[in-house]
Image 1 (cartoon, rainbow, N blue to C red):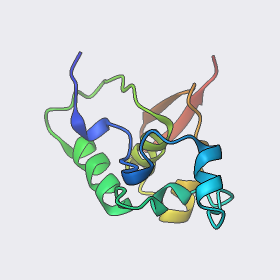
Image 2 (image 1 turned 30 degrees about the horizontal axis):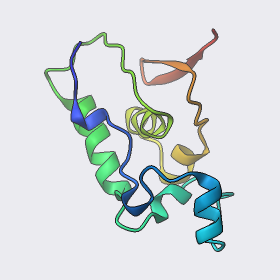
Image 3 (image 1 turned 180 degrees about the vertical axis):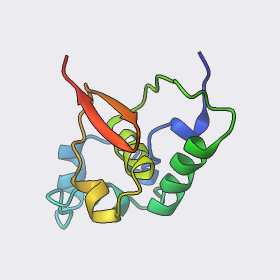
Image 4 (image 1 turned 120 degrees about the vertical axis):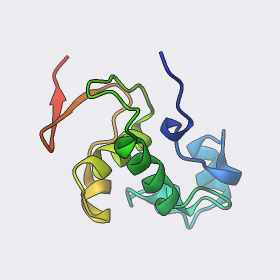
Length: 114
């Protein structure tokens, strides 16, 4: 087992540890209908930072050809987006499950039924 800081969930800045109902109460302007609403967090991590981490991990020569990555849903979507070279809109249209497995192989992304 190897811990890699590049695979931690995106930083939510001032919203770190907050519950969604509390955020909506404090920020009624927040549009959680937009899949990338997380990027609006004051002091939060930028999309470019998340993409750099995901791409860096994917391009790292030390990463085994076969690896199992355990991460949160948002970072998982960013990792899949970087892997398949998806644009911003397509990356955020992906599923954001917290309980799923995906196989990345041959440039394809496959959700594994379980």
